[in-house]
Amino acid sequence: MSIEDQMANQNNRMTELTQKLHVLSNNSANTQSTNGESSHQSQSSNSSQKRNKKKKNEDDIRTRDLGPFHVLPDTLILYLFKSLDEEQLCALALVNKVFNVFATDEELWKTLCIKKKRGHFLFKGTWKRTTLLGRDQIKPFPYKKIEVDGFYSRILYKRWYRSTVPLTQWSTLPPGTPTVDRRSNLSLKEFIEEYDKKNKPVIITDVVTKWKAMKEWTKENLLKRFGTKKFKTDEVDFYAKEKLYMVLSDYFEYANLNQDEDPIYLFDDRFNEREEVKELLNDYEVPIYFKEDYLQYLEDERPPFRWIVVGPPRSGSPFHVDPYRTAAWNALISGRKRWTLYPYEKFPPGVDVDWDEDGNFDSDSPEPMKWFINDYPHIKPNELPLECILEAGEVIFIPSGWWHQVLNLTETIAVTQNFCNAQNFDIVCAELEFDDDDMCEDFRDKLAENRPEIKWPTNTVKSGFRK
Ligand SMILES: O=C(O)CCC(=O)C(=O)O
Ligand SMILES: [Fe+2]
Image 1 (cartoon, rainbow, N blue to C red):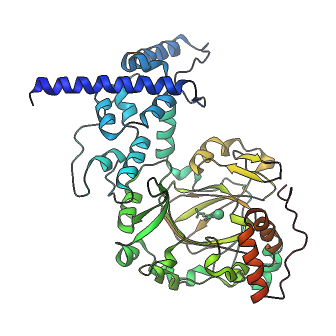
Image 2: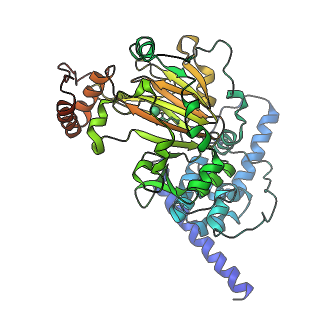
């Protein structure tokens, strides 16, 4: 093909793309809200002339480069770009610098890459390169990052900030922070009286240290034993409509190189079902404090309750209450995890709660990095959470119903289990009755069969129970 033909082709493609964007923008403009994230909303600007001039300059560059699309807020542009494929994004990135910034957005490429390669990618430093390069292709970065002087996008800046800000400022607890007790040599009786019955969190420091996992679950050793085996992550596999599985060595490569604000978390509740990895079960033992577990009688029918959890710095779990208000323990083999805890009755600031007329609620929580940046600094002194930094070799007890959030301060390897014991049995039954009739029925039968002395609670209040 001659250069002229290639240029004509490129022009045609650009015209096509422009038309597509026009159609998309017309369809979406009426329905999409901007969440106040736009960098170019009309903010009343009575401040200095200098700032006005700078803003005008930014607007000029944005208007010049985006052409007719400059009227759209950044959120909408990114939203529209989500419907483009990799070729289209590459073509748009060549149009000019501002288009290049939007079309190079890593979140767009992350989605594209996972759609295209599912869990079979070898991370190459950026999601764009991971999408475009084959597994074995090694290519040096061809050019320096393009500087776009005079263009500012609030939404992209915030995202960049969340994904690059050092975690050191959250790596120690501020003086005076209410914190979780640390105990060793704790008898089962003491645990029950002082923590379980009081529904009070505690860290136990001298149990996990004795596990085989403390020696066996180093990154190097896990790679040696299971490097080629697949593990389940918390990322959605778009086409399979289930969670994404990744080979462990690929996952660690990604964990090592990624710059995501909310990195993919290895979160595997099925490892015990796969022959090639189930031996992991032999490397730890449920601590005596948490052995009583009535849900065990459901056997294969019990809901997921046991996870291997591996994640890079910045990954973690947004605020939630565990399923059916079961209690949990979380044992850290390596790394550091920052926990933020609130009792059930106290909704964490920054969490959106939606009640229905039965007193049931849904919650929507920001990712941990967002929460620490946006919500944590504004917490009123009388709303302070209970906090702790869990260290390697420690296990934390999260009592029934407690809200908890986890931010991994370093790469971490952990194992966690949920359980239902005498202390939370009534609550778990009520939640089951509320949520899942079949499982409830099953649980009732299995308990009657195996533990006839345990009586099903008679007064579980369904309606309004949660309030
Ligand atoms: O990220 C973590 O380690 C916490 C996991 C957790 O809370 C859960 O599995 O319910
Ligand atoms: Fe949890």
